[in-house]
Length: 438
Image (tube, rainbow, N blue to C red; front, side, top):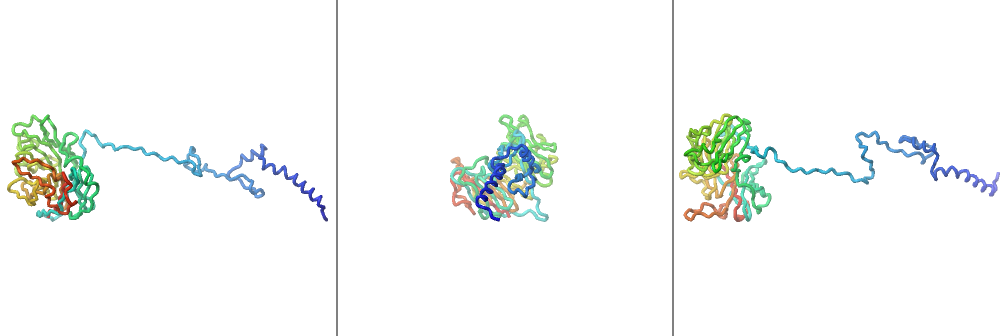
């Protein structure tokens, strides 16, 4: 059967009229309430109608089951919102403890000699002797040994540090600025009044000692208090009777073996209360009965041992002058940062200058060694095995009495060994000596 052209055209027009109303539902948007209700009930798990691909409701992810979400935080898949960066509040360091009280100092226990090792015989040899610094004033405030065995010397204020090999014979490096002037104290704190007192706890007995001084106008008296319920000195100005007029002040303590300690006191003269029993002013100090020097006949430093738990005095002696540094070896020999001033004690190094060191035996009855190093002052000392390190200054300008020959050694005349720099920096320089003891 055939269809005429006119009939075919009429058929197409009729089909178009029938399809037009149904297509309008998707082009103009449905306003039928029933259709809106069906759309509102759509869920993320709605099934897709296989007979109507592309027109079913979209699948929306459901985040309600995710734990720990914050309902106030909006989902931002494209990162259009900048996340808030938490701010860190700066808090300055706050001093620990009561600032009106002395601060606890760390004093290491004295090493115990190896079994069967006798006290070595001294054969001192200078390994390194040098100045450190530039124009202006520098000095060495701290010396010691690093955990990896190197020897270090730190300038006042910590502006520079020099490192030497463990045997002291090689300069490894210098950190910081040698030309920057040093700052801070020179040597230990000697103003041990009030919160400046020296306080430390013995690592073996756990007894705490505090040593310092009290001022009574122009008069000063030392004291040493113990947590073991005993004390030394602590006299008042009225106790300084005839023959005991000189001022004195407690400086610091060191730990010895067998529950003992070593106290250090500065005295303006031997005619002071510290020449008496520290517990009884009516008796002479029993520790000085066998002393190398009972009276310094001027400014001196007293070294006095005692029992930490009972406070019973042990051994002691004066040395002439005020020693700013000392160290103790495992055999309890005391290394003092001053040459021993006596005619019968020779200068074992003969370098000259004011500064040097001496060694007292454990009983403080003999000076076993003394020598000048060329320094003006020794501010710090450290000892490990057979190595002794001393730091201080050199090159301080002096105006000597015309009748008295100057004892200071100019830095340019220091016989340097393994120096840290080619020539003196000028003015006051840091001083470093490394000595092999045996």
